[in-house]
Amino acid sequence: MKTGIVLEGGALRTIFSSGVCDALLERDLLPDYVIGVSAGIAYGVSYVSRQKGRNLEILTKYANDKRYMGMGNLLKPSNRCYFGLRFTYEDIPNRLVPFDYDTFAAFPGEVEAVVTNLETGGAAYLPVPRRDDKFLLLQATCAMPLLFPIYRLDGMPCLDGGSSDGIPWQRAFDMGCDRVVVVLTRERSYRRQPESLQRLIDLRYRRYPKFCETMRTRAERYNACREALFRLEKEGKVLLIAPENTRGFSRVERDLGKIRALWQDGYDQGLARAAEIAAFWGR
Image: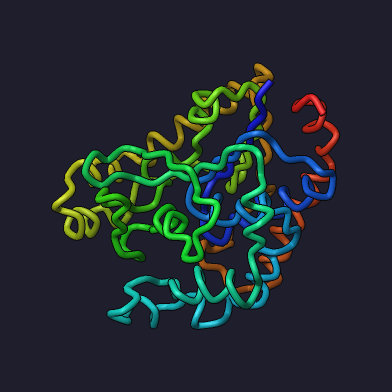
């Protein structure tokens, strides 16, 4: 039996997933395979490194720090991103809230992140390097269109993996998993609407027409993906965990009360379902 966990993205809404993962760490529950998209895996590496509470500490300390996120960062020629790239991906993990590279490197399973190939418009699934003090792949998977620069990974132009595969559960099955837990970052009733900035995306990324088409069909594909997941849940093939309510919670949320509450929702659900997950994973 090969177990897996799939972590949806959603920028700061992903603190819900961190709550779930922190609860699973408390019960010493880690799968054989971890895959995430965008902030799902950027936060998810702290789960693999067994650092309970690390992501909550980061957000409560720095969500209102201009070095972490804000329009000023986007306007800096050396940064060109809403998030302060050096501060977020180098200063925090290497100095301020240290990442445990040794424990992450010792994880015996597989860890993958999703990026979107701008040339093909499709998803690329890449192993997360065990020692990268700049977290370049994690930057690329988090690279929301219009808010991040384009990344090049071995020559491949990339942006946010959520554009092409928002909830990569199929990849988990393709990698041999037969017991998959999926952590969503939107409530079960949520339905994605068509991209409101499509015209701007078409203009900004006109060199990549296949990517523009991917963005044009994103909402339809995402909603169909969730409907398929709900069917698999009923068939007992996946176990789903979703937040109770994310309405009013911004993907760049600064309200610390809201951040703590969404983490707590995930933590409470993770604890409540820990025994179920353990049985599902055969532990």
